[in-house]
Image 1 (cartoon, rainbow, N blue to C red):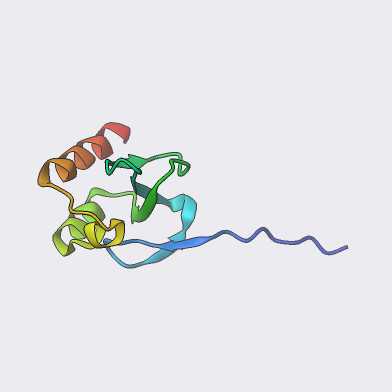
Image 2 (image 1 turned 120 degrees about the horizontal axis):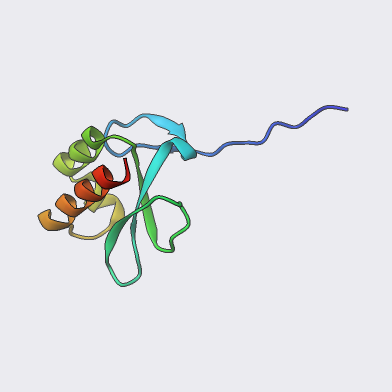
Length: 91
């Protein structure tokens, strides 16, 4: 009997543009109230975008404004700073 391989979904990092398996990426989510936060579980409700688990990709996504475009909302600098701080706290 043939064993089926489980398909692992891939997502593209908004910072570097590389496609990686979903568990290797970090989800940034905009909840229905419009708050933007990091989703370490990958299960929060809301519109999500993915970045690699390094600060350089977050900074690159900030510079290119790809997070704001993907989440369909304006992201203030204070939120980016908080995301970066939250990123450092989890590692």
